[in-house]
Length: 315
Ligand SMILES: [Zn+2]
View 1 (cartoon, rainbow, N blue to C red):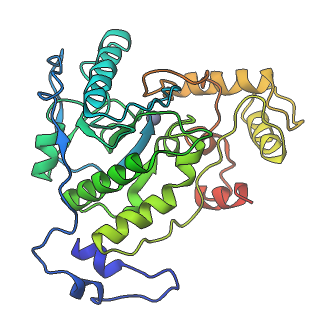
View 2 (cartoon, helix red, strand yellow):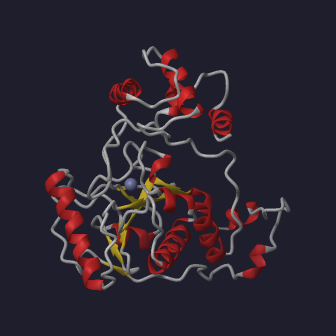
View 3 (tube, rainbow, N blue to C red):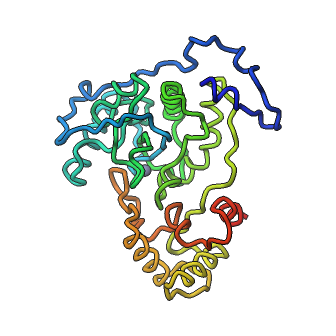
């Protein structure tokens, strides 16, 4: 926390050294402790294997949506406990995981539940990390929050937003994670998750968490990688196609994300062992050919840094 405060920079570029530190005492917690309903409260099944607790803190707090297209209007606690059971059943019985994939679940009514066993106890300790299954190839660094619903075209309910801000502020405070390390699932894997609408609100989420913690938000040094999908058209698709051709894939460079391009991305992802598993309870669509944050670094030419390419592609 102290380190983050010392590094805090206001948006205008004014460096604040110590000033923010005066706003809170050294011992007071900046974040309100949210109500988190434990696995015992929702009658979770026992995990089918040993829960892995890593001897370090998580680096990132990752926002997901459950891709439940109903966006139902049952805002009760009983419903939140029910979806916790539903997700656990799906992850264990269909995905074959040892337990719920995410560490925490946030309902449309704003009720927060523990996902994977021990996540709450370990969070309260503030020094270790329960390894989940929600961000392929990054589960040692990422603590995931599943938000009930599908937010590709519609916005989240206010209750869900408010509980998400509170929960993340508490997690960030427990681990000393600064708001810049709040990410969306698509920042790691080629997936629509956490939905375009919710993803677009991540800067606002970082600001809101920062206000709760009394921290200014540092701006990311470069924009995130774009997410391209089959059916997309335009110059970014043409750029991706040129890179794929240079990598040995026989795709056209017509700027149309058609079947040949989709097949190339699917083959590339399989060859590199990239995660194509949706973290969530259902898939809104087949994401196996999505070209996102885990594919771009494999195909951009080495003559520029990743950050330079991200800036270029954001134009
Ligand atoms: Zn996700």
